[in-house]
Image (cartoon, rainbow, N blue to C red; front, top):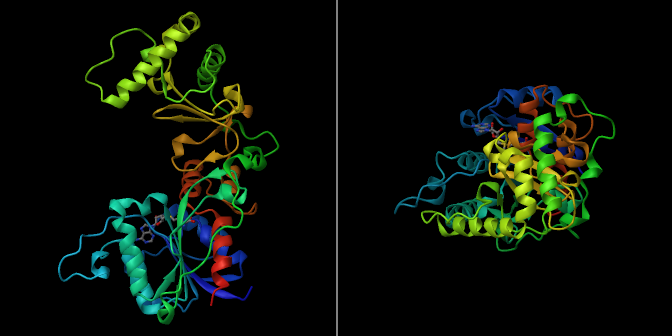
Length: 387
Ligand SMILES: C[S@@+](CC[C@H](N)C(=O)[O-])C[C@H]1O[C@@H](n2cnc3c(N)ncnc32)[C@H](O)[C@@H]1O
């Protein structure tokens, strides 16, 4: 592929940088306000990214062919009578992108955002972004692309919007035709493909308390008659008490389902509750379980486990959930441990020689915020074929 120059806005730890570099790109500018990210960026790429994009004069940015940005999703102001599209975006970080594009008329743009961008503010946010880019002279794909690493065979379910554009003010009515070829389904993936094969440091293994809680729920799942459970299990409602009338309908419905489950398995559940002292040693969120693995597995220890505020969630071991919140790092049931930082890097397709942040919490957060390198590489490669 021909050499090209790119800029990396909201650069984080350089998910875009990795993808562009792999395609032959040279980074000429990066901007990021988080100090931990800046350190990682410098250590890996030798570039100082410590720049607030709001302080940048577009004239100070070198000429480039591709603008990359994973910008935060913010609400735009409602249009006033005199207000143009651009004015509605003022004050937002998207406006910073507009500012640079106005000056540089960058040939290609690759923007990334959460899936929710499309429905955000009843669709208005996307509409403003699309119309703004159009007004600036960009040709876009007819619909925003929604892509997830699992479609490329990387076992992470992470749906994100990628906006691809090409500067083409003369042919604006022609649309860009770019999509993934033969995307894989979730079930064609396996979490075991990205796991480290050796024993990992002790800090990743679950605690005795967590193991005790999970063993109890494993016993529960194996003991009840049902294998597929389409509602959250709330053990506090394993009783025959009247359903609280002040609960909203959806919640009453779940309570009723839990009471039915209880009555259907009364002998077993009473014994189970007694054995585990009514779960009184469990943290409140651990008295709830969300079985989302259908009947594909028969033990918790065969699944992917997450301790979530809404309860303990079990999924089948095909894909990891999107890396986002650092407290909910997925657990590999089979090995009774959380995924390692290296595994988090692999889920975002960072190369093996990438040096993550030494601070464990920061490292998880940074990979959680980053883009998947392979997804961006795949789509950008397609984009650059368009002239
Ligand atoms: C979703 S993350 C992007 C991560 C990046 N694409 C990657 O692959 O690692 C958004 C980043 O924008 C940064 N950010 C927020 N406001 C900024 C500003 N005014 N100037 C530069 N960066 C900013 C945040 O610190 C955050 O790291």
